[in-house]
Length: 315
Image (cartoon, rainbow, N blue to C red):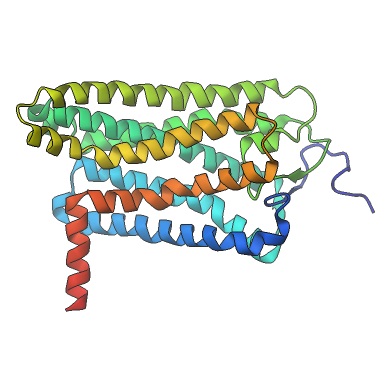
């Protein structure tokens, strides 16, 4: 019988997901926090969508962007967790080659989409604070729809070449992926031959997409802070800055760990594989879980609507 770890093949019919190498015995215990995070992400993001849909006063660009973020978080977490939990609970390790590439596409695509949504939200805050009288005419619901479509097309078009490149390589070393799901670095790392095109394109996505998005956000907030400091009183400055608090928290949560983990996975070979895999998997679920909590707690309109729902049910 041939060993799947040594058999020569090109574009194998299946990959074998190893979960978190070195911690296989603890997979069931590790699944508990992941399942909890996924449940919170589902409940939180569906709650955001429900509240915005039911509350007509929230039918504004800011909350439409928040709905886009919630949908992106739902797709991103659902692209990862069901297969991961089936591996942890039922030892379901096999994943079809095409299904693996499809999962890789959705994960990287919706990371890119989420980054684009954060840029759109930053620009919305910029217009609202720096040009308040023109906000309703610049950021219309029609414009929000166009921005959402542009963000979706951008994410799909820039990630698709990465998947097509991964599909063309010959996988003649092993079909065992040292992760509980398919990501670009792990999949391409199994290919034989010269895969520098994939590596370079992956770095291009990291720096020229998320890096450029981060620069646009920094520029927007530089202008926002300049406008805030020109306001007449401290109370007005704090109140205006408070409208950006939830957005800033979500940005920090999304960009800084993502950049550090992406660079570490490529250049730091000393970090234990199981530690890096565990931290990377935890990070993948942190934004989908925490974003609805951040916006639910810090956004008065959503918080008031939640309290109204609970009080109404309690009475």
